[in-house]
Length: 126
Image (tube, rainbow, N blue to C red):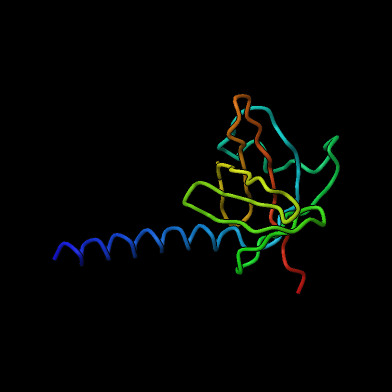
């Protein structure tokens, strides 16, 4: 009976992780980077990219690959955490998914002085 409960708990965790991974899949336009951790997009929704950092697109694929600024890598989504490893780097970057829905994504660094990157989903033009 205990093993059945454990299997059920693992299945639920995998489903939750898979659901948040599915939200990531697609193309995201970089809008701006902000100092600190931001977890709400209400005041950001109307922002357009006027960043001194320029433009860029972050793309997540269902096969756990991503592309950012013509650099490729692999990612792993663990609930509210996103681990990203570029192919040309030995280090893995760990980011917190501060906010995600079908239109907006906030990724926050875990450093002592964190930053938050704001992205808007790029809609398919079909």
